[in-house]
Length: 308
Image (cartoon, rainbow, N blue to C red):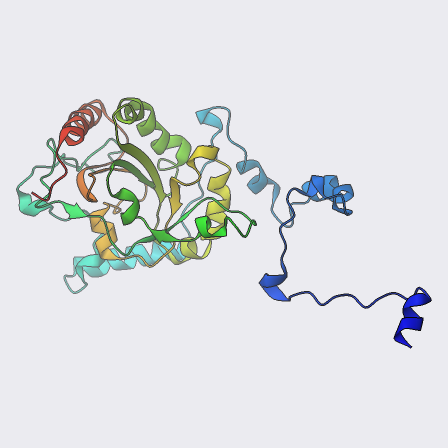
């Protein structure tokens, strides 16, 4: 009976396909799908789901600094939480991790550039290279996501979260941390630092430049996928694996080691080949901070990589 049904031209039963994620097949660009998908390419390319127009516009790289997208104000829940923590810390009953200001570093052995209320120029940076014996080591358990994303199953492993400490080994690293606030965005504070220090720093051998988005707050952690989507369209293609987003739990150790106590301003870290933060600054580049950075970066590049 089965053979007679096949001979009569009856449609064959469809072969069973794997369900769920295992059933997703990567076929390449939609425009090249000769099996029928190409005719829908022009329509799908114009569909942006429920993304508002002003968000769509922010995905385009600005022509000038004035056209760069302005970050929105922090969420009300995050502002209230920060104010409550600051008030509790002022009573002396809260833990040290609730402090909203930078505590004393290196037991006062190394003077740091002072901070004045309302200051946006770089502060809290030393005039010398911090000895490794008292420097802070980059957190070993800090997992970050690259902004790179793909649907190719052969490339998905490259988009997974990984510890950044391993990437720091063997090279001198310039890391710029930013929160996306108006003065701590890719086209504002981050770009200003890159303009004044990157050319000379990258000319040295065995160096690398990383950018890390990190901001405290429940809302920021829950919208990390949108943050990566946004940043992926702001950076160059060769920076997809050197631009990262941190979406994990906010720890006091991370805040203190990476100097993330002022989310309104960018943070510049100079990390040696063993993962120790040897120089740091918070704020926009000033003439003095830039000159000091170039001096200590030159000394760090010539330093021998030993455990002394």
